[in-house]
Length: 299
View 1 (tube, one colour):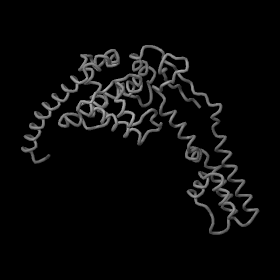
View 2: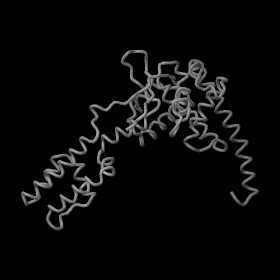
View 3: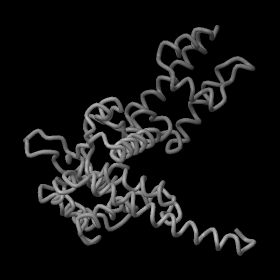
View 4: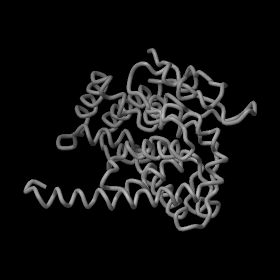
């Protein structure tokens, strides 16, 4: 069946460099999920084979010992030794043979359904300037659910490094980065590679996109009268603020990479200005909201 291509780019210029996924994560994560639990995908697509096997097994079991679908599925998920232990409890040799054969048939169906040894996935490898990745992605991804440009930046800028100092504000940024990865790891389709909270604490090295996300989280916390309190606004706030800090138009945020040295050198100033502006705006608008709230019965 048509699969489409994935968009990748090399992490470095080395011939064997890792290929980072820009587009296609959902398709690849589905393949990983299928390989972990084939029955979940195979069963609804092959109801006749599944139903025939369960009917044959139950007709061979003594009265009162028939399997429900969930019990059948649980046995299919168990390892061979556990299944053999269950089969040994069937007294009749002929019935045991029939049941074993049906389980073997289903296991073979699951094993042969997709041959991963011959599965080929077409990939487009982008080797141009990294600042153009978002534009390349948007041109390729005309259908389906699109990633935002901020999600593309997060994937594309994984190689960048920002070193945090031990100031109070930069400590806040570091803690927000930890919260972000901890939260992402709870529901991730892929395992988070190369992330260790202890290592992050020791090195204090984050990426440019990490900084943008952490800044967005900081603004949400310290400017809650104005900043939208939704997850999908975090990146927009953070990347937008970095654009303001380097005097870069929001439509040209892909060029933030060119300013990474400036951001590193002026990070404390950027954070101090952010704190001051958030504090001033919060004071003004919280007072205004309190007045509005006091004058209306409908909060």
